Length: 71
Image (cartoon, rainbow, N blue to C red):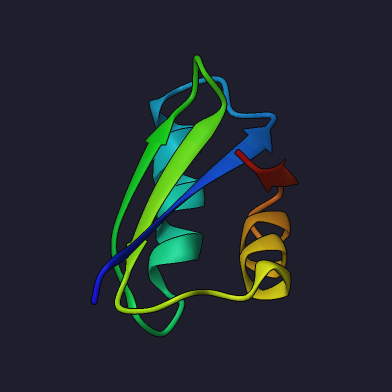
């Protein structure tokens, strides 16, 4: 089963920002793909199963950006 989660992230402004946030989320267990879009502030995470919001928040915040919530 594949689960898609869309996050809203504050502070991304360029491709480097997108890559940084993507790398932080891709390191989570079960994550299979991450696509970040700086202009919209959206990050789409594909995973093998549901991910806890606290894990997502910690991963994003750990990259220096701000987890706003799930879209």
